[in-house]
Length: 230
Image 1 (tube, one colour):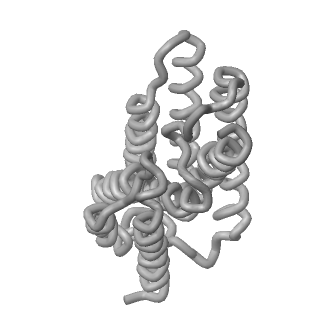
Image 2 (spheres, rainbow, N blue to C red):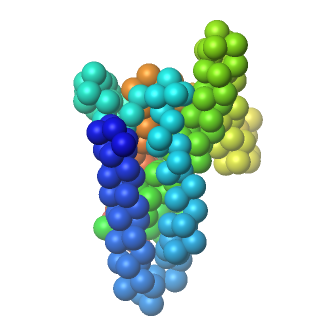
Image 3 (cartoon, helix red, strand yellow):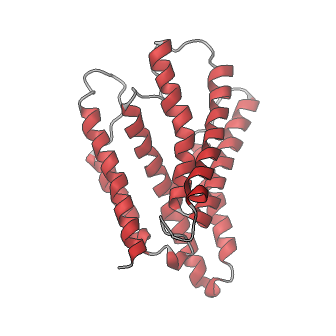
């Protein structure tokens, strides 16, 4: 087993450990908050599906988690900053413009702080495994095999577009046309940029971008609502 694959596995299990800590922490809060969302052992077992794909990054032309020739600015901080921009846009549009009045209860996109840190990290991890790590790695693996990789870029583009459509279609807003268009195109754009980062600088990049978005939209905004509006 190569050093890079060991790093992949260690990081993956470290992320799973954070999710398990979140479950244990959530269990101590369940009597206090009626709308608390808690992972179960089923979620942890489901995440194990992603492990075999950690072994085929090189065969799929996907960088390993901590590939040595990729700078951490490109792998972590640049995509994280892009995620912050998408999060800020959502806060401005969906909270400041559409819901300026105080919430009377924590909205569905928020959870009690600091538990929210664990839940939304786990949620981001889960989405990136099933929206990026598994489908794009598999599609690119087929692409490297088909015609000796001659059409690999087209396989990747197909996978990037396909996976980028899933979230905006699942979470499409209702109401005014401009809101529907904003929801769809911002969701597609963020997911597509994540796919580009995943292919160029690896899984940590796509996860970092989503964590930047979640930090503002789910965690900080949720903390603000909990502390200053309720």
